[in-house]
Image (cartoon, rainbow, N blue to C red; front, side, top):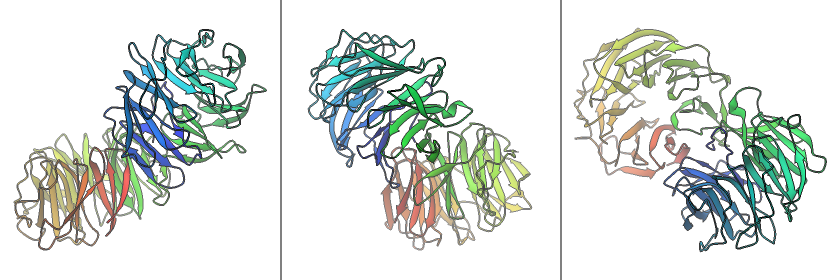
Length: 597
């Protein structure tokens, strides 16, 4: 989902035919299809990206970041970078000329707050000056002669004529009493509209911007002094849609100056502030402050679809009855449709806006989650609401392990505890002299393995919800924190992995000696996760080296029989098997991917 920031507009762009949208999150740019689950990611930026805009011809994308770097790259081939330009100190917004040959990147800097240049050679198209504070919006008109409009935190709107750009001194652009958050030319270039934090929209003559034509909104009209963050024209240039802090999107008839459609995103909370807008062929799409994308139907004035997911780090994933669920740092639990790639959020307070560290599936199919509120919640996935019952974890939860034959789970608490919960009740809290990091139950739930930060794997016998130290000991030597552990579905093998890249596999009925002599050490960075295939014939491991390795020989333990798959920029966080030939992964790029082996 798009990354949003309170008090600021979120720049989102659509292709000419409206079947693809582009938006930013972190240092990545996402090209998302609205017709399929396909998502393309551009990863060349080294800093947070603030703007990404698709060219009118649909062939190119221009994106700009916090350090003022602008990259021009192919929509269908993000691996091909057409051009790289240093525009200013920081880029806030980007716009293309109607012929897809010129770009303006604007933001902050000294002395230059914006740069106009050709997309292929980077040659200057004039000087964009006149602002005394950072520029927060820019737009080019749709036909010759060229005209460019910008707005800034100096509460002024500036207009530049022709190419090379020349500042229009006749236009004062000081009608707004607060920041002008958006400037947009109508598609036919007849009008220039500006929308601001004062809740007003001003419309000027597109050819002679010094002539103000109309004012929309005010203290008693429209958004009633609520900040307008975003604005977009209808394709026929007869209507304007505005998104505001009053949690609504309003559609204005330019001729009558009246609101003709009123879309209400929510009634409470700042998460429904409308901060981004795109007018598609059939729908109006808005971006809420929580990152969700809402498609509005004009006839019913209701949402026809809402795309949910993660705008912050994905922390963990699990399957329940074949359905995928994920949790993240933004305190959201998402249910996924594997065919369409669309997600649905669970409603309710959940973990009280705290990061959710881990999720697991109990025998009954219920979902167990732990978060930074130091609580365990057990939620029924058949509903759409979070469980309201809170079970104390006993401290900061590093992770969770769930049972296979009963509704038992173990919470690994950073303060040196392992908390056992059976059927929603705490049955044991074992104090240990180490920091538990991860763990897993055996297939019969009679044994629990716990990995610590001292490179040791501890085994416990489980009976009646209590833990007792097991006679089984691991003879494998890890060089760092144990970060992952797993039992094979047939119950014959147990594996552990550490942040020093080493993997040990042992027989559950043996003496703990590694079957893969000296351990496997083929990842290039810390291992975060591991899981056996449903038939127990393969082991998959995910690492911060941005890849997963499929270990295919678990009989002779020949390390050469492996397959390495590059997965996620920044590293792999979690992986699970859907079936013997399909793996689902979650990564630092805030994406969930499905891989067919």
